[in-house]
View 1: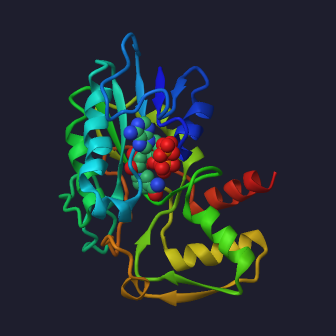
View 2 (view 1 turned 120 degrees about the vertical axis):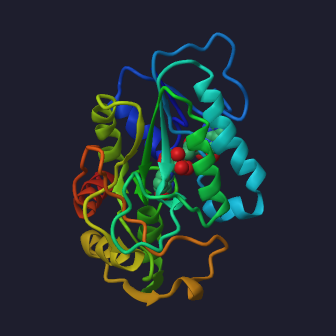
Length: 258
Ligand SMILES: NC(=O)c1ccc[n+]([C@@H]2O[C@H](COP(=O)([O-])OP(=O)(O)OC[C@H]3O[C@@H](n4cnc5c(N)ncnc54)[C@H](OP(=O)(O)O)[C@@H]3O)[C@@H](O)[C@H]2O)c1
């Protein structure tokens, strides 16, 4: 069993949930290239990805080389494959949770590469769509807010995008249950939903910081890539249900402060 993208936040969590797996970092396998000669696996947990959503707008070809070409190369190993995808394959116009049968319509270059990556996974694959990942390593919203909260009295945070912040440890643990399901696409995200501003307030509250959150709009924030206004994911196909996002946050903060 191998885990690609072993240096990333999900990759790290997968290595803990699957201690029998061999982790491959980008240095060991750049997935824009075919698998290294001699590499074999009975299962591939493919966590390597281009995750810079705004950067993908400037360089969609490089993002696609990782998010589409990388999935194709992982599938070339010929083993069953788990490939993670994103809530950003949806346009966010719904106001009730997105289920697996909803039609994708990505707004951003990143979302398009993830959707094309799903198609590159082949027949022997579980596509696991998740959302707003955070964990104890890598670049993520929780770690960014903790840094900003320590530096500032007030942080401006977007309040008109709603999703389900998902703790990587919960997602990694649920992967074992996904492996019991037939191949196909599954939505696996935290219970509950919130806006980025709600999430930031919860982070400051749980971390004991008195930083204020100034609620702003997506337009005011002015990120390069468009993002769905609503991207809550739920499963209509019996995918595992994860704990509430606030529980994930508490566990992540406990781990960060240990
Ligand atoms: N982050 C989110 O909010 C989110 C939401 C929904 C779905 N997802 C999906 O969940 C999966 C895991 O994401 P994550 O949050 O764990 O991302 P992450 O922390 O950014 O980790 C991605 C890993 O992939 C590696 N990587 C990038 N390009 C590579 C290449 N060419 N060859 C080999 N490795 C490469 C990165 O290495 P470097 O550090 O060297 O770049 C990094 O270790 C991805 O499929 C992502 O699209 C993420």
